[in-house]
Length: 207
Image (cartoon, rainbow, N blue to C red; front, side, top):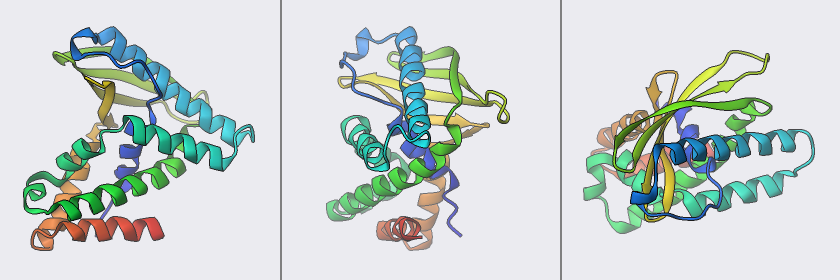
């Protein structure tokens, strides 16, 4: 069975980003990566709370999220990673279809799942520099008395388009890596056919 519980977080990675002034990789620092996560993640949580409070309608919320994905999410890069070695055997039409469906699934899912974080507070607690322009930002989502606090680590990378979150660790699980295992497992069982993963994602969208 294809378990895609954590694919929602792929959308989360894209959602936790708003318009910012791009900078080169050399100009980015750990402090900037921490500030990026703190600012953008909390913006999304606050927007969801505004939606729940009736201050923001569903259409506006959906449009804003889609714009953030289109502008800031490196969908081709994420797609290449989760497809693993099977990307090389797929033609461009298959890849384009997978990217489109993958993005749509993520948007639909994180809009539903992120409602769980509305009213909570994200607190960045530090970071580790892995290399030039490559950071792990540590944070905790504070439940504010409505449940348990959740530790979340973010892998943030900088490039010509500025800072972007490329993976997240929730409760000890790196989500993009888990998604890669799930998706490549489906493709492998289908004899290397990427469209099998596309169909699985499409089925989930229609549920």
